[in-house]
Amino acid sequence: MSKEKHTRLIKEKARELGFFFCGISKADFLEEEAPRLEKWLNNQRHGKMNYMENHFDKRLDPRLLVDGAKSVVSLLLNYYPSEKQAENTYKISKYAYGQDYHHIIKDKLKEFFQYLQDEIGEVGGRVFVDSAPVMDKAWAKKSGLGWIGKNSNLINTKAGSFFFIAELILDLELQEDGPIKDFCGTCTRCIDACPTEAIVAPYVVDGSKCISYLTIELKDEILPSEFKGKMDDWMFGCDVCQDVCPWNRFSKPHNTKAFDPHENLLKMNKADWEDLTEEVYRELFKKSAVKRTKFNGVQRNVSFLKSS
Ligand code: SF4
Ligand code: SF4
Image (tube, rainbow, N blue to C red; front, side, top):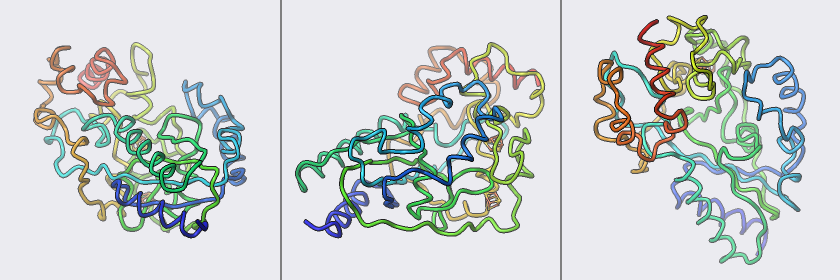
């Protein structure tokens, strides 16, 4: 089978599995990203996420992650919900409403990989979703799935930015897609709206100031007092810089049943969160990514917001 046929096969299967965009790049050193990543780490923009310092070389070169890698296939899966949380409550980032995306996407990728083995024969490679040192946004950008906006999210001209990114790194030569241009223009809405002023310059997010980091990644017992009154009621993650982005007017509701929230989640008001028991927490977030913060983490975040 020719590389054109392999490429067509992959793009058709991606669509069939529910990924709404699929783009391909040659597996190569990420030259443009290397100095940017180095500077970001040197400036301590990763806060206490020390794991970001590991595997620097592997992050920049997929050939060090996968033997004989020739292509990176980037995939986007929509998570934009049809319904949102009630007004005036403690907020959860939309990506965490339903079941943990890691499991849902991993299953799809495994099926994808098996399909390639069945159709093409011996294909070597690995599948990734947020689980190894792969610079997913950089690859998606290189493959023409969007541009990286001033809020550092990947933005697609037809669908905005509420989607997960996943990759297949394969030892298969495929037809490459090219990058698209940056459509942020003179807009600064995300920078102006960020509650903690974490977007310190266009295209530079100081991870250590970002509410997503503070509420999910930071394991300290108490959140830093400098953020009191600035968290805009976000208790797990933050969507502000995406919600204000004009390109997200193109977001359409996902059709992945597993991403639908527990029926009671959207109804929870502030008092319900403040009185949350471990039992209700377990029921609401049975298979959710919110489990990453554990019950104590949710309690810590809620009491910080309550006392702000
Ligand atoms: S996620 Fe929230 S805190 Fe983080 S950069 Fe965006 S608006 Fe700022
Ligand atoms: S809000 Fe404006 S500047 Fe920010 S990412 Fe969207 S288009 Fe770019």
